[in-house]
Image (cartoon, rainbow, N blue to C red; front, side, top):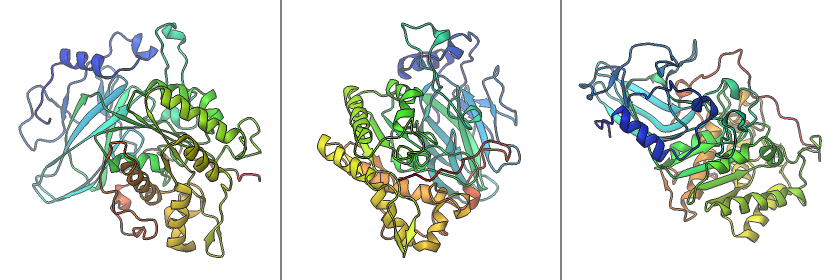
Length: 436
């Protein structure tokens, strides 16, 4: 793929044939949308392909259609290309002719696309993966594009890299070395995620969620994470997030559904759903909707909170995890039991060491950091691979909740974790405790 050249005209045809999405009003009204070159070269390790663009250290420019968007005073090198909504096969060539390198590759809002790669001086390697790009609009043929509905964005989403018309690739690490970037629209199978803050792509400080680590453990598919902090099943429906997800779901795709953290909050009466009432009913409705589209639903029990009591985890989701298991059994839906797996993980680490799996330097008992998210994503990938859905996993066989990887010695190092928000940007807020 690295040497493949497609003309601007061909790129436009492929985008039309393969992206299989509606164009957002912003793009539909912008006749000057540039057709980006296929290959961008940042440093000369080999002779650039015919038609490739040599990129200097230029900031992103809408008219040009590409440029760097690295966070000021951050530890990442982020490059963005203006593209249409859809799935893109991305190939990154990494390595340094003059020194050893260590490169972690991320996409959009801190999605880990590949395990960090350590290379000797002069070594070069090409990594390829699929990135999902989307915007918030739900343009439909029977509607006026200007008045098309859109997803209700909130928090830091407006300044993020997920809901825009750009494909952003970022590298980080002790000595990152990005040589070139090649993009190509592809008709990819999708794994779509619906959920809350424990699933979403966290881009601020040390917070992370399992959904953003999942691409690292899956091969040949596009992971589209529609989860968002604070979401319940009801709010996911009323803010058009489910509409957007379903509009992006095609026959053969897989939809993972994990809720409960916020549905169980009685102090949120508008979206509260009882474990023995509305909660399982909503789950069943979402399953029916996914199946109606020809896709495969997978139910996921909520990740446990770090609520130790005499060395054991007290289940703060009591009733809700059982409801997921019951619905999965009744409807014959594949189920991933993260409540059980994360409970085992925390207890295996113990009350003190388990702090190293959570955000805000361990002060948050609900939301994870890079280690916790990476570990849980590995469990999800393992179970998906064993569910008979035709998925290929990468490195997920070694993850065992009873014997967790040492949080101080796993594949990601502190320098690998990219900073994608300035200190002034909105951050993940503290979660209100559920009222039982």
